[in-house]
Length: 497
Length: 129
Image 1 (tube, each protein chain N blue to C red):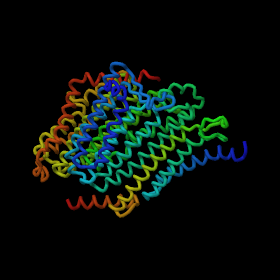
Image 2: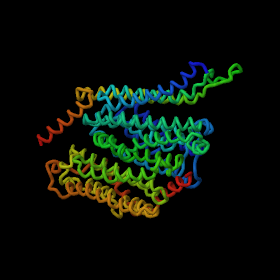
Image 3: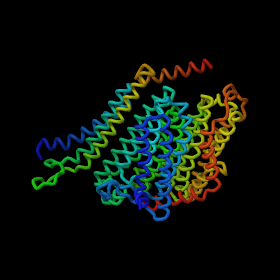
Image 4: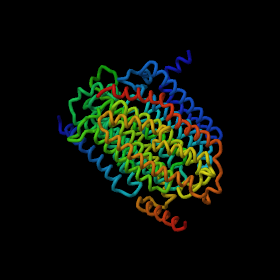
């Protein structure tokens, strides 16, 4: 009986668990209690997300009316094949990050601030899960701001004073993005009289003013693009990732931008339609252009960075380009590739940033030159970094290969063979920046820092190795994730033009 | 329509746009961290008005079920904006808190000076190494 009730309320419980966990941590505020509570909350959320994914696979879309109001009046949580994938990825990465966080946070954050750090981690996770699960346009804005405010705080907790400036700049840009989004939602509401995404899509054909819709689309898409760091709007990202505490960077890099990408896909496929023309330019070709720019320019910028975290941050902007490229190509294979890359990139970037966090834990430095020969002192950490790097390039046998394979197949399928060529060509830029890290980590004679370092402690190694193993597993046994990503793609394409 | 009503419905629209653009311009053009936040607040406030303007109906009351009233204002935009105001307060408070911390760490809240200090420090490090 109680289990059935829990089952019914799963869509909201997935979000509530980390939110309440965060509150609990903030109220108790005892250094020893924070971590176990955070782990329990994240684990409960992951269990809920997995149960939801089983239910969606068996019974299709789950609609949950918050407070029992019908969807025209109240907020509807709507779980389908698309966002259940995002829920699983976000809650899994949140759990992995929190496991990693215990030692990392203990060494990087003042003891008095540690409970607050865990609170913010949990609240950020709750916000991201809420953005994914909700079927209400305004509710998505509220969750977006919940996760964003928590994220600004997390970044500001970094040790370097530049973390404060990075957090401030992200706050300004992020708020402009969220406000753009809310302007667009307001215009949509004026045009359709509802905030429910399904109902908006239903009533859209009746809207008489195309100009209001165009304005709504522009505001919403630009607002979301700011949050997902789509190229030219990515300027906030490198500093934010570089100066945030290691655990916060892991969470941000593997979840925050991914949820924004999901929201973009939801609006493009569920509401506006991809092939809308703006004068002579179609939305799809614009998105392809920006994605290509990200893949090439951001990856090229990554090659010249001297701070490993900043290097990986630029690589993230480039990798987001692959995901948006898959969305822009918009056939079944390309979208499968995009959603696979959302999951794969979350896992592999999580592993990479964890490895850097472990190096910071042992050596106190993230400068590329200081890492000379670190692979000999920290072989496991070095191996994790290597596996993540190979997956970033897309070497067969790693998860990155599978998602790029689908993207390439999708590009050929759409009759755009030159895009497939671009995907492969841009991977060579990844070879250069990953190769640069590898050369320094493994082949340089150990420097002063590496000689003093020892292998990272078990608490850091376990989550790191788990994610690296998963990166390889997802590359070899790709059937299950590909199936999930494929049904997500089908669900998106089947919705509306 | 009386003059007041015309003014309220037409002029308010222009005011919203002017406030919106003024806010955005302030964020971009000003280097002072506090002034940027003022701009951000203006920008957000204009959106509150954008939602509230169409929700207001002349002669409409609050949505109370009573025989004496027939015309009601739509309560939903008001509720939404109440939420948005709370979010705006949170953002502004966090932004101001960050500005205070930045002032303590850098001794200035001018963006150009902060960047210059970071650059000078990075240069010093290079020379030291």
